[in-house]
Image (tube, rainbow, N blue to C red; front, side):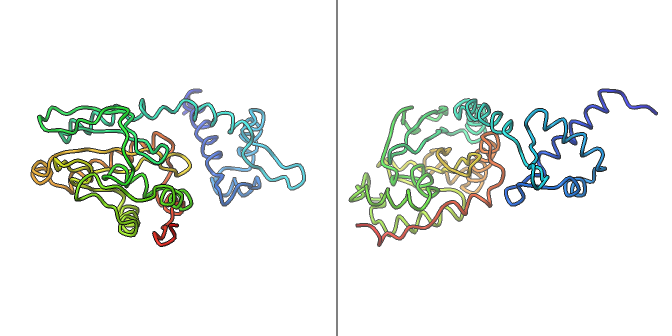
Amino acid sequence: MEHSPITSGGRVLEKAFDLLYSFESHRPEQSLFEISRKLKFPPSTTRRILKVLMARRLIQQDGATKLYRLGPGIFYLASIARDGLDIRKIALSVMERLRDATGENVGLHEFRDGKRVCIEKVESQQVLRDTILVGSQFPAHLGATGKVLLAHLPADELRRYFDSSGTLQAATPKSITDPRKLANELTRIRKRGFAFSCGERVMDGLCAISAPIFDCDGKVDYCLTITLTPFRLQAKGREKLVAAVKESTREISIKFGMHSLPQQKEKTGTVSAGRRR
């Protein structure tokens, strides 16, 4: 039985993609036979695919070692893809689904100049809800949103935040103002993958659940947060809400270029509050 040109072409294209993805950070260069063995392609097939990819500058070959590696065409495509990534556009439909699933306000926040800034929001129909507006900004140590962003800063940036913040100001009696206590809280947030707060930013006792959004480099510049009253938190179940927020941020992270979460943990570090000047 003969295969149609479309089916045959599709398989060749799939093989080409498999070949490109066979290169990894710990294996940036490979020989023809390494690629063939890893992907279970005949050497002749592998050679033909490599020739086409080299013509498009997606693969290049070292003249001395004859090993193959990803070519400059990859960087060209990556730069275009990165320029096209608008976190608001990527996140909005996910935020709307999260709002519909939880019935609560959902906010997209960015870490900027030592503060957490709301850059997008979808409103719930609840009478009692957070009145934060797009563009509103607050000190990062106040509430779950800022704490999840701080928790995922690289160690040197987190240290600079502690050094530049001076005395941590309280907004409510529940605000964390002890640097050592805050540093310990950030460590716990990194381990569990979300932040929770209740009444740390405003006196009305609104609670917040926030989770990080990872980019293709494993950095966290954004997070997603839902806010609700303690009564609604208890009625809907904290664990269920946490799972919903984390699933939403994972979906956004994948669309934003994240490959895997385990590697991201290595990029952040614990900062001892005792090192503050």
